Structures are given as C-alpha cells and as structure tokens.
Amino acid sequence: MVSILKVSIQNTKNDSFLIKSVGRQYCIDCINRLERIDVPFTTNLNIEKFSCKLIYWVDPFDSAQMIVKLTDLTMKSVYAIDVVLYDTSPSKEMVFQNNEWKATLDMKKKVCTNCVFNRQSFGLVNRKKAQYHFPGHNLYIHRKPQPNEGQSIIVNHIVSLLENEAFADVHFDVTGARLPAHTLIVSAGSPVLAAMFQNDFEERSTGIVNIKDTSVETFRQFLRYLYTGNMPECKEDAMVADLFGMADKYGVDSLKEECAVCLAEQLDVENAVDTLIKAYLHSSTTLYEETMSFVSRNASAICSQPSWRFLMKEYPDLCFEATQFISLK
Image (cartoon, rainbow, N blue to C red; front, side, top):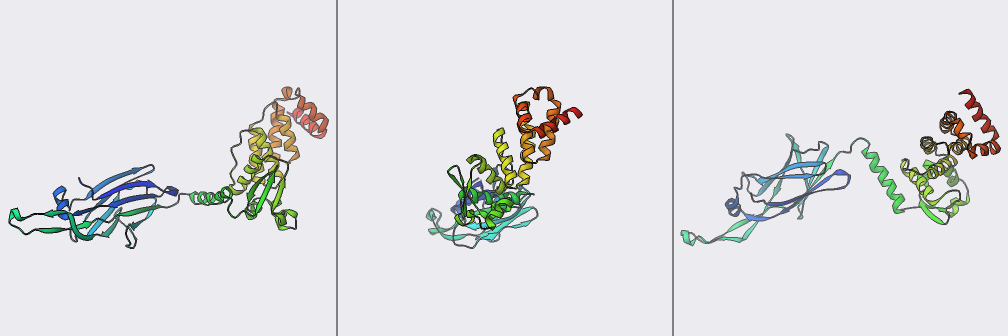
C-alpha cells in the first residue's frame, strides 16, 4: 500500500509523545492507480510505553479534506491531542469519540506536474490533473500526570535551579569552593539558615556563607536535600555521619532522622562506640536506642575494642549509661 504521509513517532518530556507526519503530493488518479483513494491508509506506531494505530484517508464526500484518526492507544491517560500543521494554517485539537481521536484537515490543490496524461491515443484531449497536497502535521499527544508525578516535575524544576545556578543569590564557601544556592529555598528547609538570612548577620550583606566543618561533596549533598527532600544514596559511613551532624546543626530534622536510620543499618563492632557518641552528642533518640541495643547484644566484642577505653575516658557518663543498659539486658 502506498503511504500518502511519511510518519514517525518520538517520546517528548514527561512521557508525552509526538507523531510527525510529513505530507506528500499525489493527484487522485496517481493514487487510484496505486491504491484506491477511499481505502484508509493505516500505520501502526510503537515506542516505549506507548503504541497506537494511525489511520488517514481522503473524505469520500469531500475530496479536498483528509480524515486523521488515532485508535488502539495503549495509554489511557491521554487527555488531549493537538494538531499543528507545517504551513501557516491554525492548529486544532483532535476530538475524542467512540474510543478514538479524530480530526479533519484541509488539502490544498494545484496542478500535478508529475502526472500529465496523454489521452490522444484514446481520442481524448490532453489535460493536467489536479494534485492534492496531503498536509504535513505534528500530533502532540498529552497525557495526564500520574499520582505524585506532578510533584516530581516540580522537584525537577527546583533542582534545575540548583544545577544551572540560575538566580542564585547566595554562595556557600566550603574550603575554597563556592556552591551557589537560593536563600528562599535553603531558608525554607533550615530554620538556622532562615534566621541567618532574616537577621543582620554578615552573611546576609555579603551573600557568602563560610562552611568550615565538612567537605565540598557532603555540603553539596546537604544542599540537594534542601532542594529535593530526598536522602542521597550514601554508602560511605563518613558521608552519612557528616550529613547527620550537619542536619542537627542546621535544624533539618527529617534529614537527621534518615541519617540516623542509615547509620543504625551500618552498625558493626568496630564503629558501634563512635556511632553511640554521635547519637549522644546530636541528641538522636532513634540512633541512641538502636546503638545501645546493638552494644548490648555484642558487649563482649565491643568492650574489648580500643574505642571502649576511649569512651570510658572521654565520655564517662555515656559509658556508665551503656554499662547499665548492658547489665539490664
């Protein structure tokens, strides 16, 4: 079957789709010699997450119009399809009826320069046939956001501000490296930073905040949490521990709790005492209880570690609490 349109499909942002249909020019007699004009031309389109059937044919009651249909859509969340023509004609929307999308497009006529019929051999007068230009167009298929997808889109927009440094009005100086940020966003996530920017601190006037107690990568992950609310995938104990301390320092309780859970999952005989000290210093009930329980279950191995002697010397009150906990178990 001869195709009157050259068709392709591609994925656009947010799982919407674009069908490109490049128009071709044939006269009616050309098409009828190749394929009957009243027979629909059908194209099956497939792409990841989506497939459909595109049908188009010349209106049998008005040969100056082409009917376009989309059927068998595998994605039920489609709520609108815009038809944007390649020429200057105004765009239009497809209409959804009887489980299919439909639009009617006007075709332009001109003389067919590629099909001149010599009818003298049949005793007829030479004449040129009218050529129909099947209109090229794009079909923009829009789908409804899935549950929580709208939130994800907004988060991506906010993250792009951080990554592109657009409209940044503050810089965090971490060991000489300056990380740009936005006071409104970081203030919303950290009451400590909010107080800093709301009051007459030096950082408010200079737009530069000096950070001295962490690494560049750790603070970058901390900023990303303020923008997204998502805990970074931290596999290194040191990174999680640093984030835990920063979350406590800047009043980001949600991050502090997530770090506490992560540190509790990483407990072993060698790091138990250090983790217990961190829980104690940063007043984390979750981490304190989990670590105490772990120490109690592994008391004989942990009490023989050099770190236990350090605990006895530097944190006698905490050591006494741990000893009592062990004895009660």
